[in-house]
Length: 214
View 1 (cartoon, rainbow, N blue to C red):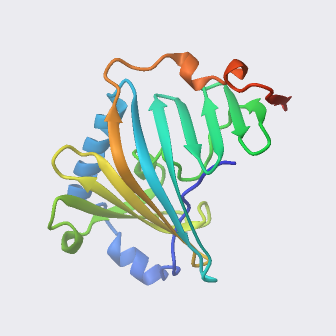
View 2: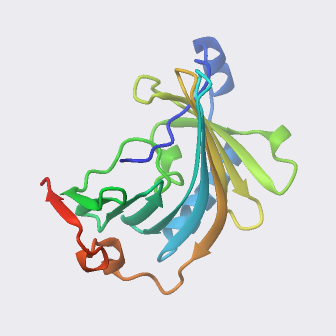
């Protein structure tokens, strides 16, 4: 399973979209650039998070998870699954059935925790929300320039003012579904993490069934 945070409630009318985002917000760009530089300069980092879904039909879903990232490698644990990649191969481990699927790694085009700090570079308009940025966090709103490319119609990013750490984001889909990621704890791994941590080791999962789908 690829955990995605795809985006917004109501479609934004063309007139409103054009007027609100006719020009990129310089203050928002300054903050987003600072966030990107902070994360890209880290050797490795990790975070525990809370995921929440509120669907347009009233269905809700909540679970906690964690992710560790080192450049193009990541390891994600959530909802009884582990997804890990060393940048070339991807392993998806299913705890319930004790099996792991092996595939070639294909970067997801959706909004995922390992890409949230660079998504603004991928065809988005953005602006700082002053009314929501009066406390210890900045709140930045983003919308896609090409609304056909993404299921999302809006994304809100919360950034800690003190050190440019991402503390969460809220996304919405065109169908009314709403997703929320809240960062519970952020950890910087100053010495980096071994590549082997992002590779599946069958010895640590006795009796596991490996399904090579490459």
